[in-house]
View 1 (cartoon, rainbow, N blue to C red):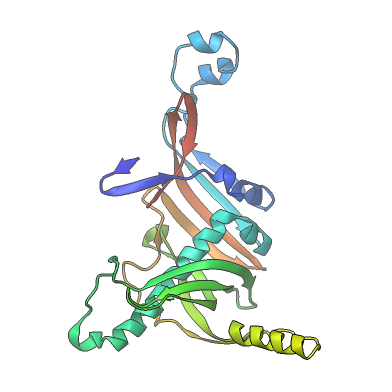
View 2 (view 1 turned 135 degrees about the horizontal axis):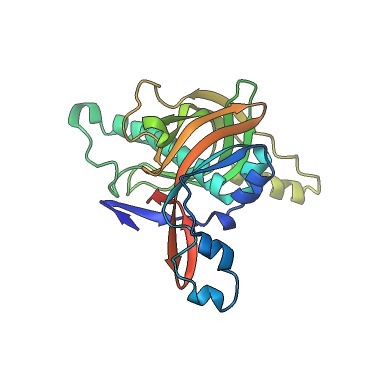
Length: 277
C-alpha cells in the first residue's frame, strides 16, 4: 500500500521463523483496540451459512499489538528476518566508515562532496554473510561476517571479513532502530591466495598442510557517538515503534508496538504490518 510518498512492503512473518522464535521464548503478546465481527466468528466456518451471513471480514479495523520477548543467539541465527535486519544495520555503519575514507581521499573538507548519499556514485556496502552473533560480558552484540565494499563506481569491489561490536538503540520514540557506539575490528587473517599456495606446496612435499590460523581482531570506534544525524538507523515506519530494547543474560530483549491492518487478497482475508521500502 502507499501512504503519501512512502511506499510500504507487506511482510509475511510466517515464513521467516520469527513466530517459532517468539513461541519458544519467554514473553507476551497484547492486543489493543481489536474489533471483531462476532457473526463471522460464530458462523464463519459453517458451510452455506457463511455465504448468507451479513457482515464483512472478521477483523473490522486496524489494531495495535504489543510484543515483549527475547531472542538468544540460536534464535537470531535461525531467523532469516532477524539476520537480514542485523545485516542492514551493519551495512549502514560500514557505509559511514567507507564514506569517511572516500571523503578524506577526495579532500571533501576543502571541495565538498561530489555525490549524494542516495546516488549511484555513493560508497557501496553490502553484508553478504552473517556468520556469527555473540553477546559479550558488557551486554554488547558482536557480529562476524563478510561484506562487499566499493568506495566509488570506478573502484574495484572488495569482499572482506568484518567483526562489529555495538549495542542496539532507538531514536524518535522508537521509530528508528540503530547500532549504538559501533566498533569495527581490525581483522588480520591469512589471505586465501597464500593459503592455497601453501596447500599446493604441502601436497608436492607430501606433508600435511597446517591448519588455517584464526583471525586476529582489534576494535576501534567507527565514528563518534556525537555524529548521529537524522539518517542514522533504519526507519520502521509510523505504524511501528520499539519501546524498549537491550541485551541481558545472553539474550536480546525487546518490547515492540505495531499496528496490524486487515485486508483481502484473491478472496482471502489477512492481517499485515508495514515497513518503509
